[in-house]
Amino acid sequence: GNSVTQMEGPVTLSEEAFLTINCTYTATGYPSLFWYVQYPGEGLQLLLKATKADDKGSNKGFEATYRKETTSFHLEKGSVQVSDSAVYFCALDNFNKFYFGSGTKLNVKP
Amino acid sequence: EAGVTQFPSHSVIEKGQTVTLRCDPISGHDNLYWYRRVMGKEIKFLLHFVKESKQDESGMPNNRFLAERTGGTYSTLKVQPAELEDSGVYFCASSQGDPFWYEQYFGPGTRLTVT
Image 1 (tube, each protein chain N blue to C red):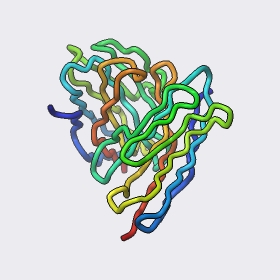
Image 2: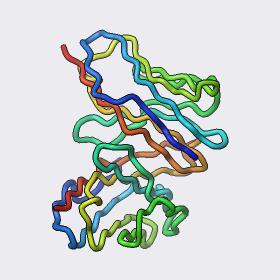
Image 3: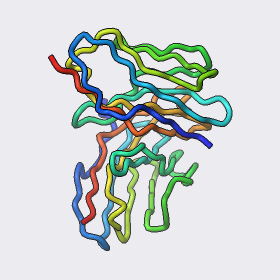
Image 4: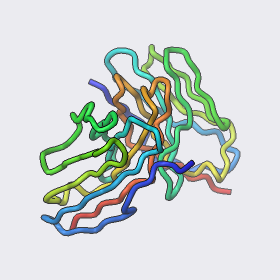
């Protein structure tokens, strides 16, 4: 079957710290992988995506690489800001159907 | 351009009552999706419309849930009768086409509380 597992939160970091949020998946076929972000009071927004193995998605300083050998898509950012505080969801799309992880809440303190 | 809108933002109902959630997709988006997040767990797919047709409704939990998209514009999701386990956040999303090529845009969600 298809599923996504991501690290539980909350994750609390100081500003300018390095961020890693782990995400692993199981899937049939060749899924596309996504990271979505939900800021307080808003809907989910696409942060980045990768559509095939070894692709790296990047946006706003965030990066994630599609690792087929480890079935992972870990989210990283070198220096977080207070404005990055949000809930982050890892997801996969297989045959036009999305499977999401449970979300990881990130709190960044000044 | 307006984004995906959902109404209401929050609904509190008693067990056994009926609630109807509404989603207005981005104009011109043929694809409309419903998802829900229960108890802070993963967001789960409910169903997918292409225009007014149900493309995939495999995620609908049971026959107490009814989704419609008359005319291929806005969509409603009715829960009748509501149960306690239906509490959660219901998200709607729309896109121009296949997520491989087109981004899904999400609404802010409707928080449903069943007491």
